[in-house]
Image (cartoon, rainbow, N blue to C red):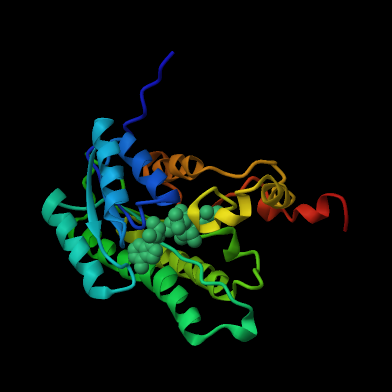
Length: 271
Ligand SMILES: NC(=O)c1ccc[n+]([C@@H]2O[C@H](COP(=O)([O-])OP(=O)(O)OC[C@H]3O[C@@H](n4cnc5c(N)ncnc54)[C@H](O)[C@@H]3O)[C@@H](O)[C@H]2O)c1
């Protein structure tokens, strides 16, 4: 029997950064299937972003693509202005855009360090601040949601698992943990919920080499007790639920969705 997707985000407006590929794309589609009007942010790939908008529209949803580099304050502010002009307000931000620029620690240039911090951490700060300004201005609309606004930061298992060779990335995700928790603490009295999703290994372009061949996937699976690599849709479903009133009492938390990667799998047979 066919099932109808829940309309748990009906009449809400959501903005997803880095939504032209991977996890952001799946999150945008999932939020739209749950009834939200969705802004599909992208940095360079307009054709892919427009394809996401077309898919959402074909499925009966509403979406708009907006280009912005999340690490640039003026571009972020212009994107939020355009969102609010077009849809009237904003209820949900999924700060998802992120990059890896890998190097051995001794070889890491300041530019490699700074680029990852600028996009992964400062980019989330800039988007969250604009979202919070709108949430505070508008307040709770009880007929739409119990909260004035919901923010989901895309973190990683690497907010808690150290990652040699990727120190800039792991540092950015560790920073997101305190960005998320501190804003959640400050803004809970204003009925703004802030949480993170910490994906484990999910099949997307960012980690293509880690799962693209059977040999690479087998090696990756040694880190995943549940014995499958995650799909972007896994994260999409969680994001829609976490943004909804079904999760209204959750704030300041990272929900790891990782098939058990954070369970120290090496200790299953040792220690
Ligand atoms: N795939 C995984 O296994 C995994 C695991 C943990 C966390 N994550 C996190 O999930 C998020 C999404 O990554 P993904 O796996 O879908 O990879 P991805 O490369 O498909 O997605 C990243 C997106 O961010 C966009 N982006 C990059 N720089 C940007 C900028 N300055 N402004 C706006 N957009 C920008 C890219 O164009 C891309 O669409 C990232 O924050 C990543 O760290 C992914």
